[in-house]
Amino acid sequence: MGAILEAIHNKLTATFQPTRLEVEDDSARHHGHAGARPGGESHFNVLIEADAFSGAPKVMRQRMVYKALAEELAGPVHALSVKALAPGET
Image (cartoon, rainbow, N blue to C red; front, side, top):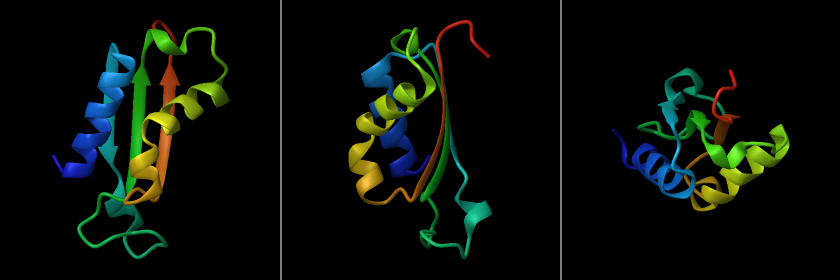
């Protein structure tokens, strides 16, 4: 697990106490594209399920995740795909 992926995982866990969390480094698919960094860890997919998202619209859920990861998004992370779910949603 890379340092940035680990930081994303740890921050999301601490902020949301998710019942499900999947963080995938998708950088290899973006090699040579804008924002790609040597060694990867620039493009990520996140699937997170947490009570904190219950009743919140999709855009608000994404903003909550972006706020938790503001430091990473301001620096090493070029792209972040987020699927944020409340428990029981698919």
